Image 1 (tube, one colour):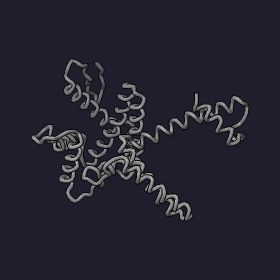
Image 2 (cartoon, helix red, strand yellow; image 1 turned 135 degrees about the vertical axis):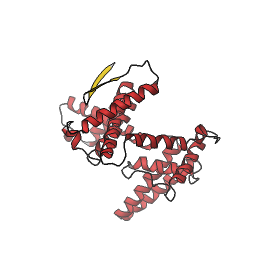
Image 3 (cartoon, rainbow, N blue to C red; image 1 turned 60 degrees about the vertical axis):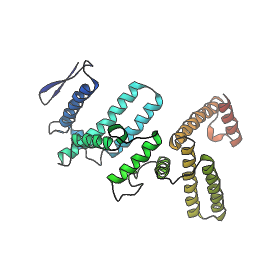
Image 4 (cartoon, rainbow, N blue to C red; image 1 turned 180 degrees about the vertical axis):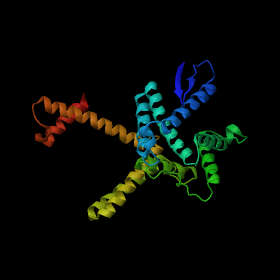
Length: 277
């Protein structure tokens, strides 16, 4: 049993003798008090100094660290990183509470209401035939909740390009605007590649940027139809490239040379040696 002191009051994080729901309620209440203490006049100078905008970069960073923990496959790491991400949500909510806008209870209540409303097949009497129909219903309900909004209005402006492209394709597909199968998207990729070649031949840099964007967007849709997440695929490719190039650097160092002094053919030979290991 862990004991904390907040504003002169002892409180405890209970052991697992209670249900998950009861433990979560108590732990969440404890965390709410801790965050309030950090932001109080006698709290932490750094935490008190923060505002919504100053914490923006931490939300992005902590989200990526959660993704890294998932890839590592270590539950302890994931638990820690989810806690760090939750900290950012708690701080943002506490700042809004101080400004009289909303508090963490409003955030949780809003989320609960949304989940119940968007899952009528669980909390109501709407029958569904599989996960695909669930997603179609989700978009319909979301559109009813936010009347007048466009299909892509909910996508964050700062979302990475390949993630955004895939999500746009998913959303369009749920309302019936999509390629029928993966081979159809492959044909589109070939078409966009040819158009990029034409733009390159013309020397028009604006046209090159335009066609390169179309090509990348189409590749993202192809990956989606193949059941692959394009952002994860490119990140995995970058990791492979990094690891292989480190091997090339080791080979060059072992030869007593600097990598900048090697010819392209020598680097190619070292690359293939690493790749074939």
